[in-house]
Image (cartoon, rainbow, N blue to C red; front, side):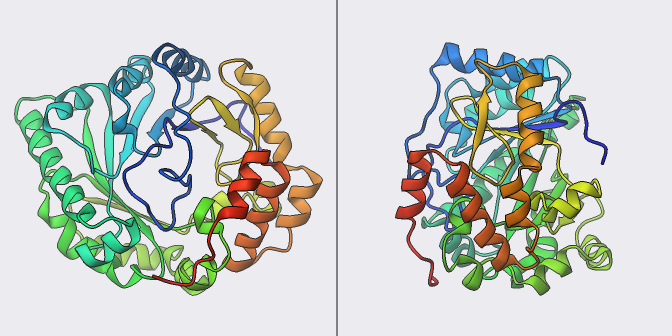
Length: 345
């Protein structure tokens, strides 16, 4: 197993504040304290992340556009040559923000989990979220074309589609009907939902996570090529089963894992993306120590014992709940206990 000496990517959930109530929310944003840092500590955390020298930083949440200083945070990374992206629902994107963000970011992703309002809004938990997301895509398309015409390269936008059972029938439509609407759209990322956060709660794997057969299809290169052929030639379509996020002991030993650090809003660093349990804080601990602690967690005897037998999505969800309960804080465990069982929409 060849493990990098540092994380290659960092995901910073910069706030847990969110206007939506997505059924599969990985961070349970909007249902818990925002934990957003004050401006000075936020910038200090950003500089600490920059010191890790990752290849890329993704600013996520929650809704990162609810953070006033998010463009200033992004510039700390991009000015150092770090590829910097931002993931948003598009709910709160304002026209006056776009040009500043385009200067600070390399890319911006709009989450769109359905090709129709009915499907997307049901998953996202708020009526009107489809219209807000598509309006944001239209705004980004206009700005991207203006910048391209002016000779300003370096900013692109795309769509993130999280595949669950209730929207799987619209995967093709994302390629044939949604992607062609935006001439400057550069990518469409299609990925299987994973049992993280609310998506790991009791009943979710049985009713809403993609089936094992659907996950296998998303991991099939032939299926991915078919989807690429459906989309405009100018749109890069990526398709993933996201099984590398499982951090299964066999996959880790085979070198199939994601060398990512996921950071919570207040700087706490998760040992493994998609699992609760932190190993320190970027405001207090050195990058090397944080990474060493994270890597050690991958081989923790409890982790390997729980993940070792996992083969199905339902088994993965059960393993996530066990690991989250073992390594999460008292507050994490209380939140897990409060999660309602998912029985459908």
